[in-house]
Length: 200
Image 1 (cartoon, rainbow, N blue to C red):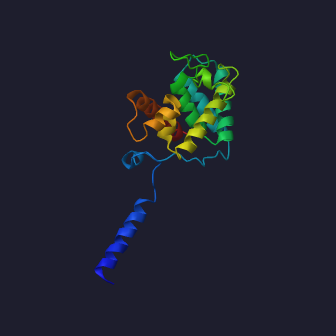
Image 2: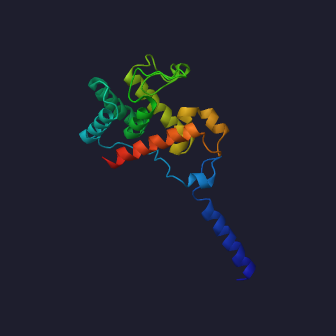
Image 3: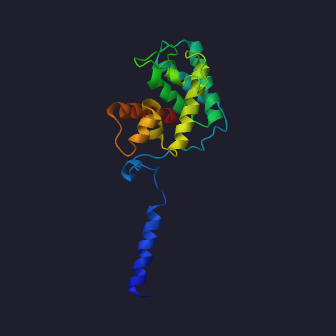
């Protein structure tokens, strides 16, 4: 085997290995390596009372002003729609903490409403008949997060950023750093999500 043949084989092998875990289009490899992709094949095989109790306890500790009837409804809805859309209920819970502090009557300065802070122009598309309805909000949130996780090939950071900033805005700026506000939003949710997972 000549040196030129060895060199060609080495370059070919190097190229193949470098493309094994190619990141989603538009995302720099250095950014993609900073976190593990969200597992879109996540499934809840057994809905244990421990999971529901963990969500209930977390909500009550996070915001003691949430009525117990709302707390129980949120936990039930997150597990129900987490199963339906194959999104971790603990992720939905961590996101709701940041979005509304679990207040179904919350209204943001931009006009987003409900526990999951949906804008009115998204109500019809995501089946929200009453923005204060916990069931409507949790279902819409789980469905949207599932859609974004599929679009971004399991990239949880980009899915969360798309939820708060809008999917088109994130697509246009893909590969660039998030805005300060969006990065803070993503970081807080991931911190709360990791806490919930570790405490199960």
